[in-house]
Amino acid sequence: MTVTHQHTVEKIGGTSMSRVHELRETLFIGNRQGDDLYNRVFVVSAFGGITNLLLEHKKSGTPGVYALFSNADNDHGWSDALNDVADAMRAAQNDVLDHPADRSAADDFVRERIEGARSCLIDLQRLCSYGHFQLSSHMQIIRELLSGLGEAHSAFVTATMLRRAGVDARFVDLSGWRDEGSYTLEERIRDGLNDVDFASEMPIVTGYAQCSEGLMAEFDRGYSEVTFSKIAAQTGAREAIIHKEFHLSSADPKLVGEDAVVKLGHTNYDVADQLSNMGMEAVHPKAAKMLRQAGIPLRVTNAFEPHDPGTLIDEEDSQSSRVEMVTGLGVYALELFEQDMVGVKGYDTAILEVLTRHKVRIVAKTSNANTITHYLDAPLKSVRRVERDLAERYPGAQLTARNLAVVAAIGRDLKGLKVLSRGLVALEQADIMPVAVQQTTRDVDAQFIVPRDKMDAAILTLHRELVETASGSLQKAA
Image (cartoon, rainbow, N blue to C red; front, side, top):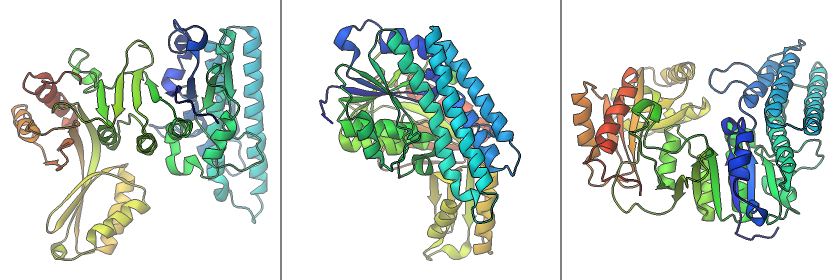
């Protein structure tokens, strides 16, 4: 593959993909003509809601095809759910494609993929009716297979739409559909883009890539950003761009007001990592690591404001101290108090082992002589399982779990801003009493732990004090 360093690699998320026909006239084409259309590789997610139907709803947990199949014995409820996926795919493509021939081709594509997946699941269900074969050992592969259906469909439809509009777009399917070979992620990308001329073609690439490493096993629903970043790093892109349906701003505009927020404009990967930790992923942390190590800057834009440069994320330090974002995350504070902990090693290690076994994510933690508190981003049932395991290991310990929120003020450089003291005064004046506060020596974030029902009010208060006021905002976008 020839590395030109002239091209960009750009990702479009599922919510934006549902309006991809609008993007045709702005992001994909707009005022561009001829060669200006190209040297852009687009990595696409499935149309909005499709992956939820294929797997399970990301927020509500409502079962999709995968979840129904994994819990099925001989019933075919999952098959009805697969029919629902096909209907949703057809509805999505009919919003995008106008020409009858294009719609017919897309219908054929959906039929071939859906019925192929159905046959595969029926055969596997039949095979696993014999005691020698266990369905559980195949479920991760099934999750990978189903995931790839959504991205393959959206990439096919998008490429078809663009070709009808006169763009030399190429559907690049990395999903491994009916592929008999075994590829690493790097080999899969190399094979898929091997003969693509970036200067004269526009590759529309599936966000899911089937590979021997198994993207779903490690990244689950974050796999498309990993594919996107790997393509950018492997092809030596000039810039990686993520198109969202909003700008990266100093807070949620729905909470603090459209007029109050400030677009970040420019930040660094350190801040991006802190946002990921707070559940506000500008990019998956593993994906950011790939781009960072490859020296490729990341830009996050609003897909529907194509003339706005968005926010650039690179390795540059801030030229001035400022709070760039205030955000919050609901957590459970798991506190372990053990009088015998003083001077004894191993307590923290044991707690981490239990949290890792139950796949519970740590947002922050504090400790003193006899108490260790972990702030956890996890459902209550998982926290209760952790509590039970720790109670068995430390029968003399006192364990408590509280429903709280971490509200963080984040910026490339917070030195000299007195974020903690100013934040505490502002919260006290708003009648919000923090449970705890902390700031690391790196001066990139300050965290205020507050009651869960006070999270929104704390964000509003801290944003007003640290971002909106003249003293907190010498803070125009860098």
